[in-house]
Structures are given as C-alpha cells and as structure tokens.
Length: 535
Image 1: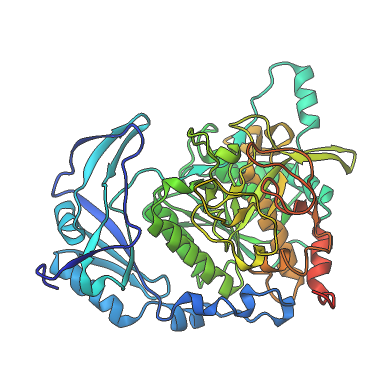
Image 2: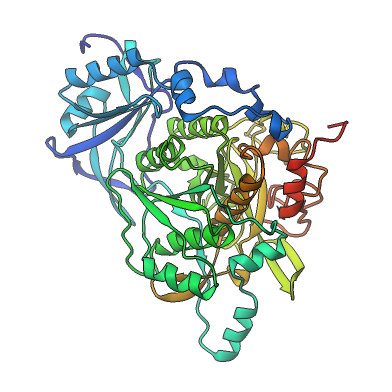
C-alpha cells in the first residue's frame, strides 16, 4: 500500500497522556515493539444480538456456537488479514502471528517503522508512578484499511488496570485477632451461607482466570487446600505476551492471583483452572481475554476477571474491542464475570463525578459488586452495601460509553450526569467483598484476609461452574435471564441498605449491588424450570 494514499484515523484510537505525565524523550527509532492489530469480523456482530444467547429464553432453547463455527462465521476474513499483512510488509514490519478466530494480526518491528505505519510519534513518559511508552492523538491507516482495522494495541504500554482486591491489615493483639477471624470466611463457608447447591464440584468445567501481574506458588495451594480438606486444584498456566507466573511477595499482585485461584477452586474443587498471565497493558489485557475465549484446548465455560479501571482511562477502541470479545463469549456459552471496582461510585477518580469501572461496564459482562456480610452460625445475620469510605467501597453506576442494553430497558435506572446520557447500569450481582468480613486466603506463605470485588468475580465464577456441571447447557450470558424471567424467582438475596457514594441501595436492582448476592440453589432451580407463563 502506497504512502501516497490518503490516511484515515483508526476509530476510537485517540490517546491523551496520563495525568501529571511529561515526555522525557522520543522513543529510540531502533527499539523493537510488538503490536496487535484487530480486524473486523466477517459479519457484523450486531446482526446476531437477537439470537438465543442474548435473549430471555429457557436455557434448553439456547443455541451456542462451537469455537470452530464461531471462527468460520465471525472470524476475520482471509482477504482482510492479507491486506493488513501487505500493509505491514510495505512498512518493514514482521508478521509474527495471525489468528482469524481472535481477529488479530501480531506485528513486530522497529519503533520508527511503527510510527510511519500508524502516523504517530512515540515518546518515553515519566509520571508519579514511573515511566511508560506512550503517544497522544489518533492513529491513522491508509484509506483502504479504514473499515478493516478496528483497533491497534501495543504502541502505548501504560499500566491499564488495577487489581480490585484489598488486604485487611493484620491485627497486632490476640484479642483483636480473635475478633477479626470471627468476621472472616473461607470460600466454602460463604458458599454455604449463599446456599450454593450441594453434591456438585465443578467436574468437567474449566474456569479461566485473567491475571495482569503477580503469580502463585504451588506450595501455597497445597497448604491452603489441605487445611480446607479439599483436593489441591490442578492449575494450568498460559503465557500471553511473554508474561509469566512470577510470584514475588504478599504485598504484590500475588494477592490477586491467589485470591482468584483459591476462591474459585474452593467453590468448584474439581473444575480445571487455567490462569492466563498477560502484561498490564490494554494490549496484554485484550489478548489474554481473546486467548481464553478462543482456547480450543481448555475450552473455558466461565471467565473470571478481577482487574479494571475507570471507563475514562480507556480508549474507545479498547472499550469496543473488549465488548466485542465478550459478545463472542456469549455466542459460545461462556460467562464473563468482572469485578465492579473497589473505590465507590467515583471509581478512584478525583473529579467529584461518578465513574463506572471497565470491563465490568460492558453490557456482555456479569458485573460483580460488593457487600459487607456478617453471619451468626450458618446463617447470614446482616448484609449491606460494602462502604467503609471512598477508597474501600463497591463500585457501581451508569456507563458513560455503553447504551442501556435491551435487558435493562424496563429498569428505572439512576439519572446520569447532567451532561450524560442514559447508559448500562452496573453491577448485575454482588457478594461479600468488605475486607472486614473478607476471605481467608494464603499468599506467599502468609495467611491473610482479603476483600474487594476481586473476590466476588471468582465466587460467582465458581458458582457458575457448579451450575454448568448440572445443567444440560452452560449458563452462558446470564444477564438477559437475570433481568427477565429470573427477576421474580428470588435467585439473589436483595440488598436494600447502604450506599456506594452517588448511588443508594433499595428494593430490586440498584447501582450498588445489582440484584444482590447469590442464592445458589434457587438460581439452579430457576434455570432448570420453564419460565412462568407471563414471563
């Protein structure tokens, strides 16, 4: 493709510098980079949104695609990939890998070649937390590629997401410790409190866990599960973008990794767990998700994601490409559980306005909010919205990017910002997340209590693995059912007390805890039953 051709901006590729970031110097022209180009699907995904995986129909009436069928019908067209490959070669870029199912072309080359290819300038930036390689403004491609290229990821490597977990400080006195332990739960205890169905162990199911840092030591899992008198889980590791299982210490992202594995595996002890480690960039995050969704070897039926960040910190191309990935997951019958954030309705932003956390705000994610739960014996004595202050409270609110999905049109959603428009409301469901009533876990040789909506995503993922074991078909995209025929079935424990800042809990759905915390056996029974006549 000739550089004489007119160039067109890649839709949604605009970037701004991080707050308080300053360019140090241009990127050395010979520095080597790897970049992912996302290519359009063969057929518009919107055409499929009336199909059964997106509708409120009985589970047995749903028709899911196989991964092979999905690639054939909705993968990238070979001609489109060929045009991207020709463009790469014309700019002295190496094609590392192409994947029609994931609709991606992986390119490698020198920084100067990428700058010319995509019409940008790359700099090394410094900001209060460190340095990153970055760019500002849009990316461009030759006009013939304008409709083919839907996203370009990897030129900018700023940290994209945060792990949504919080470690409760270790008490110093024995008396305080005893009190703290009384308010901490093992995952099996929470499964019992939440009435998860008994006699199921997740056999035959695979739970994918996305991690953007940290790692785990098998010895921790052996110690933890032996103490719980549960089988030590079989955990496979998949490396994405060169990231590895790299444990360091209990104050790192290891806390997220161990929390996710231990919660999911304690709830569904016979499920296969596959952890996809990727760099904490928009490129790494997206590639980990698409790798898990299209994994024909492990075939996950549930994906647990406990990382995210305010919608305003993402490019539009990232918001849309993650969302498309979750749509394809729904077509395969894969449920995507996402933590809704740990910093209240502001989601950690200091502008005084509410912000929704992404990827939980995707209409195709099961967004998981947080509660504060106390129990007496084997019964819940209190459950309210988790809110211990601005930086320790459940996320939730209204998306500024995604429109109100069909399944939420009957809801009375909170009024958006004066300048905003109605959008997707989140979370959809909730579970115990307050570190003060948190989860007993083991991280790098230490027994800790950890909370955060990070714990709620793998808790729901484990529950869904149990349901998938029992049901004739995977649950898949739960939201249309949750807001439709299941809404009157008491499949969730309604949380009616508390606030996350801008939003308050109340009867029915709310922007703090969604429909509420799980009533596991009720959910199983409702999914097994035919919908009521008026549904």
